[in-house]
Image 1 (tube, rainbow, N blue to C red):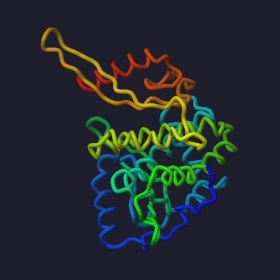
Image 2 (cartoon, rainbow, N blue to C red):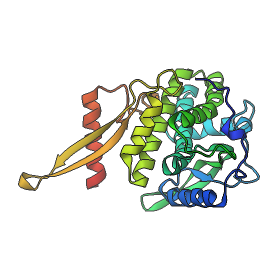
Image 3 (tube, rainbow, N blue to C red):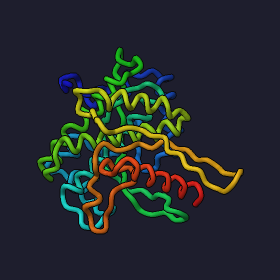
Image 4 (cartoon, rainbow, N blue to C red):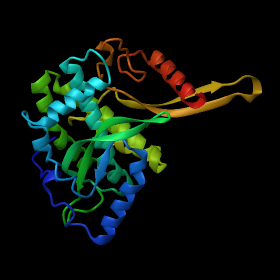
Length: 290
């Protein structure tokens, strides 16, 4: 693919929107934000401390180092490659949730005007814990460019935003571009599935994700990434009950198994299909029966 087209990030923010479009977009974001407290998104400026993506991810910028350092919260014994793998998956998922909410909910291919890395409190069981998330100030299509977006437009916007981040992480940590793009595709597919659940239309969300990650010749193409419906029965006798849930199966690896005490994720690409299926069945059963 070519990155020569105009960056959505560089387009006017909301000047191209009429009042009805803006209200619709704001209502959609307000409806979806409670489903995704781990990411912040808005149509307004992300605050005086918000930076452009280029400024935030600059080699000598605080954003890059803060993002890498935060990954140590998720495991012990990370090296720089593992931090980079976790960071691109972490950032890619939050970017997918922010941009994908407008794309899946309203057909709008938005960009990122500014962003910041902020503290917030999230529920963990019955208590609140301090955490960090990215907050994206979104830019809308310019005047004359607000027709419903398609998979190609979204794919290019998403990839154009991530390309310099991936290049910077490769220089900083040595993690290959290919490994990072596979993780980014995983994040997009996982984020779309979450949004689809929130909107009540998983099938549409998965279809739109696959139209992006199965498009050969693009950075986000992923051969092994897929979705699978996992089913499990529980109970005894004629009263048996069945559970079913769609999972995103990874095409990339976050390298968690290389951390101290780490292991393969339940949906890891490195697992044999049957073992992965059995792990996900156990996960589904545990999540439903507590």
